Image (tube, rainbow, N blue to C red; front, side, top):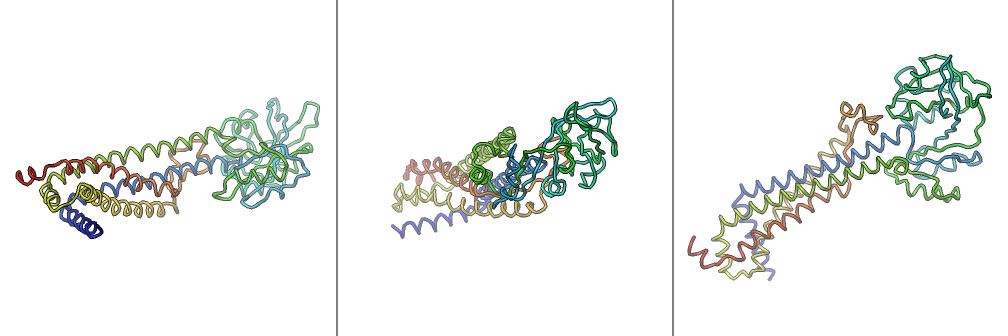
Length: 389
C-alpha cells in the first residue's frame, strides 16, 4: 500500500511538471489570491485599529469611570497593563464675554499628563495648548465663534448666577469636528477650577494590545463596584458595530474570492484531465482502484495548493511587514471623518486569523472543486477511452 502511494505521488508530480503551463497558471491564481487576501485582511484589521486608536486617543481613553471619590488616589488604578490614568474634574456653568453667554462644562485637567496621553492638543487651530502656568482656558472653535473669542480674549466663568465670576484668558482654540465636543466643553488646569470638586473622572489608557475586560475586572475588585467602569465599546457602540461590520465584509470577500478561484481550479482540472484522459485510462488498466485514482487526483490538487498557498502566505506576510513600519497614509480621504480625527495613517496588522484563513480556505474550496474532475475520471469507461484515443 505504501509503495502504491509513493508511486501515485511521484506520478502526480510528473503530471504537474509535464503540464507546467497549466500548473503555473493554477498555482499563480492561488498564490496571488492568498497573498492579496492576507494583505487585505491585515489592512482591514489595521483600519479597525486606526479607528479605535483615533477615537480613544483623542480624549476618552480605553476605559472611563465617572464620579470617583477624592479618597481614591489615581495611583491605585495604575496597575499592570495601564499606561496612563488621567484625572479630570468637571464643573458645569456659564461663560460670559460682553453680551454673549453660553452654558458649558468646564473641565479641569493636568495639561502635561494630558499632552502625553491624548491627541487633543494636536487639534489646536489657533494659539497654544494649556501651559499650566497661567489662568488659561482652552476652547472649541464653535464655542469660540458663539462667544466671539480669539486668542488672548478675556472672558468670565460662573458656576451659577450668584457665584463670583472668575476671569480666564483664551490660550488656544481647537477643532475636532465632533458635535457636542467643540461647542460644549472647555478646559482649564486643575488648579484653576473656580470651585472645589470633590469627585473626579478617570480616563484610563491601556498599553498596546491590552484588553479592557481584564483591566475592568481588576478595577472592580479595587473599588468594590460593578458596571461603573466603561470600556470604549460601551461608550462608542457605533464604532464597535463599524469594526465588526468591517470584519464581516472581509470574511465575505475572502469566501467569494476563493469560491471563484475554486471554480477556476475545477474548470482548469477538467480541461487538464480531458486532455490527458488516455493516461488516466492506462493507470486504471494498471490496477489502480477507484480509491487510489481519487487519491491521485487529490494528490495533484494538494501538491499544487500547498506550494501556491505557502508561497502566498510568505508574500502576503512580507508585504504586511514592509508596510507596517511606515503605514499607509489616507489622510486626504479622511479629513472629515471623526474616526480618523488624529491621524489618517493605517498600519496593516497580521493576526492568526488573517494569516491562516486564506490558505486554509483556498485548500478546502480547491479540494472540493476537485470532486468534479475526479468524478469524470472515475466514471469513464477504460475500454472506450483506449479505443477512442
